[in-house]
Image 1: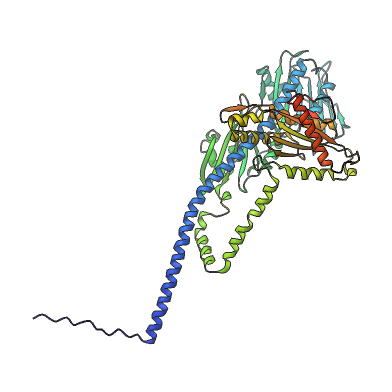
Image 2: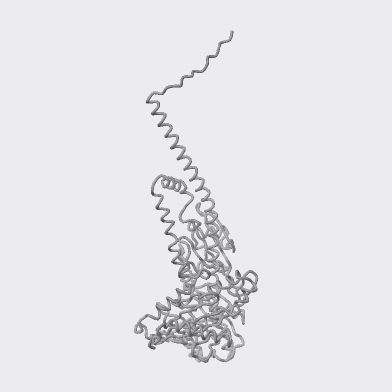
Length: 564
């Protein structure tokens, strides 16, 4: 006999006050937990997605930024170093044409000193003869404003005359003490004699005179009037290092320059190891990040291209590109930096801390602080954009004119010998590049032009882009001739070689209009800045109608011709 199932009790269960209170409390806890869990899951999902996107964006930003930095740096280094080749070529042609006598030490000394005055990239100019005669002029003094001149004669007997001059050209010391120096034993002389007629570059070495590391560019002229000679020019590597230290890199990044043999030519920050008696290799002075980039095989593993690697668990991005200084002379420019420098300080190991901060922000009024920080962050960017040309990174028109106003407003008695010049440059034939190859190619050409001009100007000069293919230069010098030579140097830097965009080479030429303001003259115009710019612009317009590719000086009938 089966047992009957009793029907359900229709009377609901009654809770005691304590049970009701506990149930209510548990319900509130469950609701709060559900809310917090939803917030945590939402924030975690958002942060995880943003983190993934941020890591990809950081990697792309790091590669793009370093690639842009390497391209601009390589172009500047190429322009900077090729001044030595240019001087050697000019001296060679002058000697062959009879305009410069290889047997006249006095004339050579004066000419070499003038070349150092107009070519700040050079450290010294020299000439050596097969019989041991030697003429050498280099910069001297703590600020390189003086001159060191050494003349070695072997006829009728060997004599060595060493002269030091101050910045005004006044002799401060002169000695005829014997010196065993023989130019024929130096690397630059032997390499040039071994390859007559070619321009040769030495490996980096320590100069015997200044005890500073540098490069010598030389050329042997076996058919020179009066007998064979070897001409040369010195470039100190410390000047290249000063340039690299001025390049804006990330806080923990480094830029460096090396040759095919792996020498540590220059760096944007001091190496962790110091070697002074010779030029070391990258392997000898590398920090851990560069050592990994070099690889276990040493400098032979350093290759061009983009690299991504880890050092002690930290991701690094590196860009290495070649710099062809001349046929047979190839250097490498590299930049590397931790990717954390591009991620606003958010490290992968701090994810727990980031989530905790996000939860605290959701549960408190402190959420306003990151919002406020995000709101005011663009203000510094806006200030930078207000004074900088977005394409070339040079000063824009408003910033350039403001600098010109400041220069004109300086009291005349502070520097009575100062000569101020304003030059306006206009690219010749640039419209055809835009029309034929497109504005993207035109922008690449303008970017390269801006980099070359910036490398050619002296420290203290102001270079800006007025708009389109027009650039402007504010230069202050001791004389009008000095200012005009500097403007000619900028034009020479532009036409030295074409700009290559993709696989297309674009020859670059420009015409310049130049006007002067002499502080000794009274300011009769109500707006001297407008007058200076208008005169330079008028000289440019008239000059382009008459003959392009030159510097036209307002108020003068003669033209300055560029000799390459």
